[in-house]
Structure formats: C-alpha cells, structure tokens
Image (cartoon, rainbow, N blue to C red; front, side, top):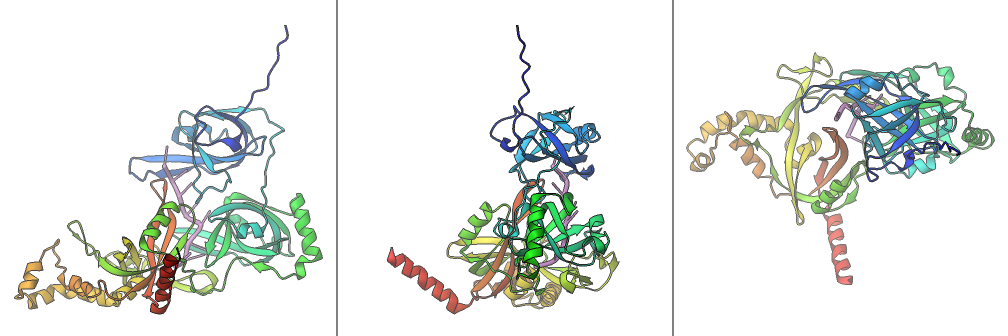
Length: 482
DNA sequence: CCCCCCCC
C-alpha cells in the first residue's frame, strides 16, 4: 500500500471575499507589522488594543489583517516580519480605503476565535511584492488609492516639523518622476524624513510601496506612511528601466507635474452642476472619493434650535496664525473654550467669532440640510459673524423694547433661557431670497469604525444668472428633442 | 471595535 502525502492546499489570498464564507485557511508571510495600539472604544464601553500585519502568499496575493484585544495580545510577539503562518477563523470585511494601503478589496479581522500557527518558511512566498504602476496610471486612478511607484527623486524639500491635533510630526516632500514623463510630490514622515540630505541628492532611484494618493488643491499628492516601504537604488527591473530613461532622455525632458502647487487657495474645482436630488444620490453612492458639486438653489431655513436647546450660529475661534503648505499662513480656526483658551495652540491667544450653520437649501427637486462653513455662511446671510453675534447678544434688550407688540408676544417662545426672535426675524429676511450657487463637498469620513460620507457646504455666491438661464434653456431644448 | 501623517 502506498501512502500519498498530499501537500496541504490553501485558499488564495487574492480570492478572499465576503462571499466565500468562513471556511478558509490561508498561508502567508508577514511583510509588515504595525505597532500595537491601545484605543478607547467610541461607544465608551472600555478600552481595546489592536495591531495589524500585511500578509503575502505564494500566488502573490496580499491582504491586511487586524488583530483585536485577546488575539492582539496572543499573536503580536509571534507574528514577526518575515515569518510564515497558517491562518483561519477570521472575518472578512470591505477594506477601508482611507487607511488600508493594501490593494486587496477586503481586509481580515481576527478576534479571540483566531487560529494562527507558525509554519516552516515557504520559499515559494516572496519577502516583498511590488505592484508598480507608473505615474501616468496614478494620474487616472479613483481616489483615494494606494500604489507602488518607482522613480527618480528630482527634487526634495527640507524636513518640516509641525503640530496637528496635539501631536508632533515631521514630514519631508520629495518629487518623484518616472519614465511616463510625469512627476508627483510624495510626503515621507518621521525618521524617514529626517535622513540626511545626501540620501536624496543626485537624483537617486527609489521604490515606494504603499503610497496613499489623495487629491490636494486640484492635483494629486502621495504620502508614504510609516507602514509603507521605501528602498533606495533597489535591485528590480523597474528601477533599471527608470534609471536608463533618466540618464538617456529623462533628465532633459519636459515632465508633467501631477501635483498642483500653485500655492493659491483657489480656484477650487467646483465640480459638476446638479440638483439637490442628484447631489443626495451622488453623495450616498460615493464612499471613497472626495467630490464637489455645484448647485443652484435658495436658502429655505437656518437651524436656530435643536430640540429644546438654542443652536448658536457663532462660535469663538482661535485666530492664531499657523504655517500652512507653501509658506502660507492660516488662522487656526479651532473652537476656543469659554476662557478663550485654544487646546490646539495650547494658549489663550487672539480669538474672534466665526459662523457654523445648519442650512436648509431648496430647489425644484427637493431640499437638504447641510453644515455650512464660515466663508459660505457669511455670504449666504449677507452678514458677518460679528453682526450675527451682535444680534444674538442684543436680542434680549430688543425684546424689552418691542415687548408691547402683539406679534412679538405671539412668537415669544422661550427656548432655554434665551429668546431667539431677534436673530430669527433677521434670518427670515433672507429665506427664499436671492438665487445662490453653492459648492457642496462630499468626503469620506469614518464614524464608529464605519466609513460614511460627510456632506457640507463649503462655498456660496449669488448665482450667475446668465449661465444658469442658458443651462435651463439647454435642458428645455434637450427635452423637446426627445 | 482602530485609523492619526497636516493644509482645502
């Protein structure tokens, strides 16, 4: 009798999806391990810990796997970079494109049920797998996305240290060009950014794995986070090709820069013109890519109360100047506390009123409530934040003066301890007034671990009547033609 | 279940 020892068959990482159920076992090499992180659960029910790895299998499939709590403690030390493992009993989820730099459509989550066993090193599994794309291809991708690129460093800035959300960062911008004759800015961080200038001098070839590409000021920019990989002068065919291109023609060629850095705040891409119903549909479908829409509509209402509470229209914002990109200085704009203290700047500096409204806009197709930021809000109300604040603060006094009017009495509905007629009457003057053109931004946000779309009004101006009329005439012509 | 790496 012959016993045939059959080699164990593993499920290909590439084919993992939410459809094939829970019966899979994969074998992969850890190519990256992120540090363990603790976190407070957003629902307030205690703390948790998590780390994640990237796994590569013999067929070249890669996926990110997160380990939570018990599984995190149990497997963190075991799962060293370079080692091979058999894994099963995890769950498969749609990858969150905001954070996940693996190209896989899904990601794995392991909890206390996880089955993870170290196995003998499998020579068929590579230690690193690049999926290099040239910048011409990067220019055409849906954003945000993650790519591997290989190019020549054509320029580099000095490292910049800055503070954001109470944390310190160091970044450095590189410009990378490749043989598609395009170039893009890629930001590198932390220790990688603080390497000596000599590392970046002399147009070296670099390969980067896991570059997050996002839209920035009308162009595209990359960011290589610490989980990504950066290798100078790599020994791969793409590097040889890029190097040959640079030496022969590239260095003297005109290169298309796909990261716009004109440094000016505008003109902002104002997006496709659509009606409110279409905007709602578009922002519901949209999950990963930031988009802006332009809408012709009118202001129908501003929220002044929320249940039984007054909804203030103005907040006190920190006006301390901060260094932005390209040497621009921008005010901090974060909310200060009742003593004027800014938690971001960590001091009591200059502060001033800023508008933050919930507006209902209306057109023939329907209406929508949108958070409306200061610059747009001032234009929509035709009032400055200071004027709104004055009305809000003086309305008690005005009421005393107008106390005998029956109309005021009928409307004198007390909300909390504050009366709102003053500002509400002022706002009513603007409802259904001038036709507006508003710019609506829909962008991916993460809330309670779920991706969702945040939609807000970021700009507003009086509608250009001629252009709007021409658009409507064209719609009529199209209807008649059918 | 996390998630920040800025600046619209």
